[in-house]
Length: 107
Image (cartoon, rainbow, N blue to C red):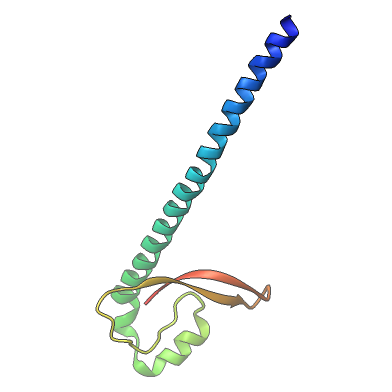
């Protein structure tokens, strides 16, 4: 009698645990992913602001190819005449590991 009652209680807890896990796991993934993307976007905009305030005033147009050659984090591209900043995903090949990695980019 005790064995069957304990077994029945454990089954109820197991079903409850599985139901909770099926709801919480995707929710946790989407919340963490959203926080990660928000943090990456804020970091990109911060790097842009720092670049505009500190590096851009001393940079000449003839220095742009040298800048792009030695700076792996920030590339200066020709303007595309966008009104607002655009943040999007792009795939780049990692030269050290020879594999493609997704990056968030700011245009």
